[in-house]
Image (cartoon, rainbow, N blue to C red):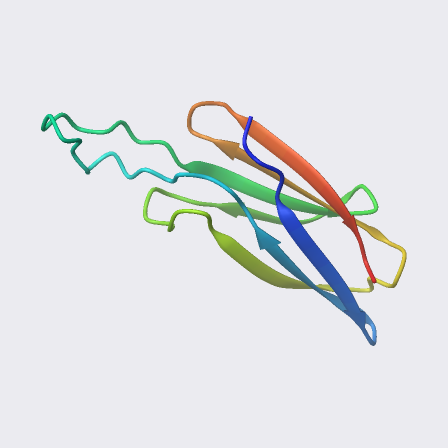
Length: 103
């Protein structure tokens, strides 16, 4: 399983800004190793966000996203004390879910 995501969610007015740093190698499937063999593709395909258990965002990604991707988005109606959950699934079926409290 991958390292935990670093999630920061800060309330400002009637919205919260969420910043997420994900630990993932994100291989495109086009690079070659030292022996000249192609390194298999391995990348995050889907990212979703929940606010207090309710889905608020979903994204479909491909192999062109950089290693250890950073994601930032805003959630309307979020306030201090709410829970933000982030989940990703990669093309190998690996998953990671983490939560943070809006401050």
